[in-house]
Length: 276
Image 1 (cartoon, rainbow, N blue to C red):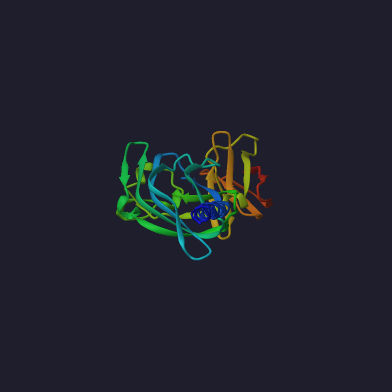
Image 2: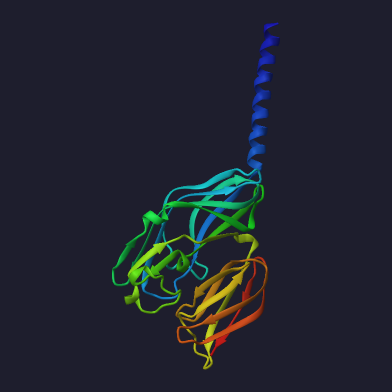
């Protein structure tokens, strides 16, 4: 009898371990990996050397309406330079498979520094939480990997003011006009794996490349912008599938556009524009 009871106890323990292993396997199999990335729409001028934001927390809302934390800490990012396809990785983690269509991002600091050494501390106005629609929604598959991209429009977020607190126009070229700066975070978010890329070069009528041209595309009512680099090149990432018109202009009033540009998921659409 004792031997029988001992065998039954051993069997029960083994059965429990097997069930536990199976449950762990089931739980693990329903997880996917997600990488949180950050990029920006830049200033249309070159006299800001730093535009810093401090991210305290990022949460994603699942299909049950529950927010799940994918990053928590104090990540400080200089957004200047995170443009034309350049991104910063905020965090990589595992998450329950499913669809996530909304995010909350909590900031607890911001500042901007100019080329003359002037620094504006904007922590007071940056200390808040923003709710952002993820469009297209983030889809995490069991055993798969996904990327969610947060795009901060720093030109809209860091709002420079002149004398009397009057907000300066989006495109101004004289740093001496700046008397202050206000902060109001303007984020968009996308499932990067469900979007495409637009890349090209801006040239003038003589065929010379144009640096620091403002290039824009309207995506679902939101204007996404970037600046051409020294080689006249630009890149947009995180663009949803669709047909778009891309425009380009310079401070010297030169302009041009390319219409009917088709963007497909996980592909790069080439867009070269001649401005005149």
